[in-house]
Image 1 (cartoon, helix red, strand yellow):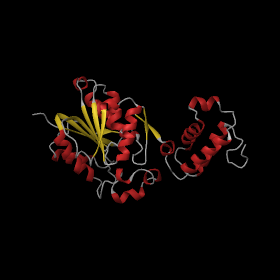
Image 2: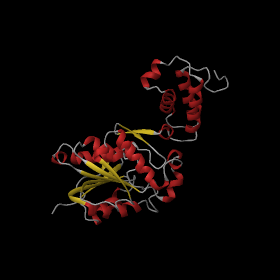
Image 3: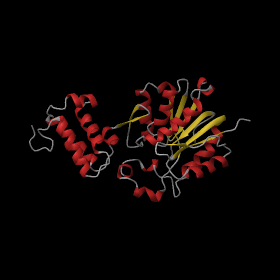
Image 4: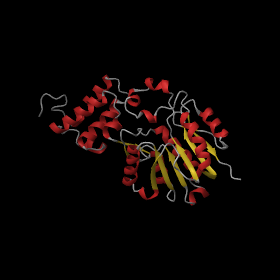
Length: 296
């Protein structure tokens, strides 16, 4: 064994505990979970494997990987960035430097859309969906996984992000129903769409410097910066979306914790009807705002 390494001579379980202690000492918020995920990835073991192999000694190669992972996490690089993938709506999504790490709050958008379309007449027709600023493709692919007859298009200004989204669509067997287009928001799209979803950049420019290091230092700036008041993307997307929606079509935005009223006003100004209450995330924050294009 490599006697000089911090995890040398340890069992799998002892290495997990040692890594958790290191992360805790550095102020990492979820040291036990992160240690389990990182040790599991370094050793190629799932939760069950970690338990069944808890008493075996780690190898030199495994220790080298654990040390590398530990060093990266202690600089507040997110676990998802270290591992290169993240679970969202039960789907395993690959990430890249050009994509946000999908967050549980964003699943509120998927749930809101399914509340509108699943289980009613809307689910029986071939819905056409647009995901504006798709990133990893998380929202679009989650919806396609639930709505078997739907097709969708995701847009992004980043070619790298779109390549990541296409990779995820292929890996999940959804490539036949998903396409991806490079453009600024919805500029290259042609309607009509039954559903338009978007998690746009909405952080106020001056607040980016005060975000958690996991976000500030590792998520792409373009996917965070919403301008001076955080509303620049909503101002651009809302009129585009209103023009692209089919009659009775729905636009759903993810919004910041204090932006619900302002984004609702932008929707009304674009002629959309707020026929549903905003949907709250698990923390009770209004996270999804819905506007409907009235059918005449």
